[in-house]
Image 1: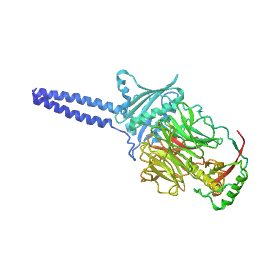
Image 2: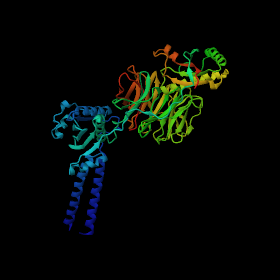
Image 3: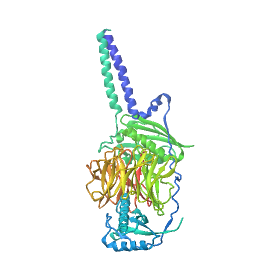
Image 4: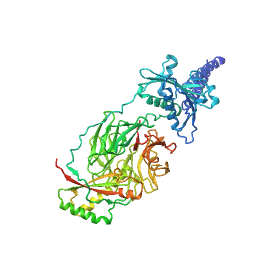
Length: 192
Length: 423
């Protein structure tokens, strides 16, 4: 009786131990549970297969939106007003430009059909997105000053180009200071 | 057999089974390379040039992939004793200290067909045996898929070798959105209209990007659907509009707009185009980056007098400052686990810095040139960024700890604002 039961225990142990080995083997060979197909390989000689594909990114992108209708205003060839320059990382308008801005205001009151576009620019040292916001604040600061002088808010558009449209590309303080600017573009009505 | 004896049998069986389960679990969890360990030893691996016409080309791609991870060291083939055609024998490799061996053959008839076998030298066993098939023009992608499988075998992690980087580049003074493989190969220009363009942001499923573009003196936000290959303007107003990241749900994006006067942060629903304003200051609020779980938004604000990284809940509440060191910290991006924020920090020039969301553990990762626009790879081990360190702005990649910085964009192509695809 005792011997028989010992034999049974040994048999169970043996079976379990054998199972252990095969389990261990499987686990080492297939650490990736996704490759279970491979387990059948020994039986069927079927190898795990993968078809390598790619979603095409090539080709032209179609623009769904129709662009806004052609501008009703054209940019005049040259700016008749000089740029307003700003300190590094700053967007407040210097006292020294108040006379320039007064003359812009006077010109606008005499040329009632004209509109102004104020472009805000930055030097290249900032990062793109922050520079775009900084350029916007610079142009907006100049616009606010002109509005305070009596120019109708609706006659002044503001756009920022950040560091995207520099007037010079040298890495010198002289060049950087020229790029930190609000630039006036007079828009002339050209009809529809 | 008596009652007691049966009880013994059951007892032993349970004992052994328990032992087996424990052992099985331990074995299954065997990870050759623990990528979470900062000082993980590099795994010496032998990768044969595959037999067949373009076998060397494929093997070179796999070697480059695995080497860049910093987790493998590819042993030069000059030291291999075993001819490739001979059956794998661990005794040929043990004396060389090589721990893994990759063999394979390739044929190129209608398409490419590659058979790969990966062996564990210590165990003396085959760990991967797989056939890959593709059309002839997908050789690089096929090789990257093999790299992904090898990487998975040894790290139990998903590789990023099939991912892409979207970025902005300029040719003939015209900017556009480009996409390239993460390793800088297969650069493709998407046929968008020439204009000023800002950084693209991927949707979580990788099927779309949003970006800002200036067209007709107006900054609009555009959504490009890669499935349809169409571009659609989803927002525009007078002033400056800049796309931020998608929400993880994919049905809304963040953005910065001056539509109410000064740059503030909004969430724009892509379903009904409604907008919710999240910040209300007279200063600058830009570059919103939604955390991977969607609960937080990191952004840049000058409310404290200089541009710094701030954080708020996704509904705009609980605003707190993250960065205090330096006077110019911008362009935040999240790690995929949400445990780090990488950003551009000014240290004389602009550098890449990384910090925990609570503001602790600040580390500077770059040193030379101006380095901007960081973005994490989807598994969080790598960072792409732009740098002008060699004179021309280009796209670089590095490990998330700053190691192995290298330029991947083509020489001479002025490029910036890279973002790593999520898949």
